[in-house]
Length: 241
Image (cartoon, rainbow, N blue to C red; front, side, top):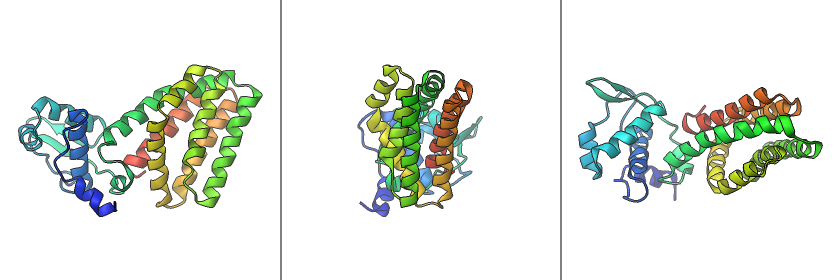
């Protein structure tokens, strides 16, 4: 399916499957992304959106609340909700339709879990654990030189951090959500490949910052570096940063 077909799909009434507020979130975000609701424009009232999409007002309200939390819309008392920013249009060329809300949630979940994993890896890693992280960084360097996608290599880096904690529950958690993590990483790296090379290099420098903090056994710096890396990855996907 080509980009045009995907963007046209975002204008359709959302399918009534999965969590309804997720579908409303994806639908409104899609309308904003393709410019149906331009920046600074006012969204339709909750009642009109509810009628248009065949859902209740509380469902619409929940979706709009999450859009506000993501900084996409803002509420003005007595005036309604207004569009504050528009995600990159290319997002819908690569993201599975109906998945945007869950991709956002997965990034938020990873910030918490992987930030703590990096801190523990800094405290508890052994020489073998550190070697695996270094090897993962080297593999990602080769990916960048070859202009390859590198999803498996990126996942391997994050897995190496989890393994370096010596706590099997971190590795088990990442394994349990690997398919969801892979969607976010694939999306990020696909979007990076169509942007100037500097975008990929920034991501790799963030990986190196995590490695440096872990190698130095600086727990706070490792936690901060990993949290910053995943938040920046989220921004690169949704904001084009």
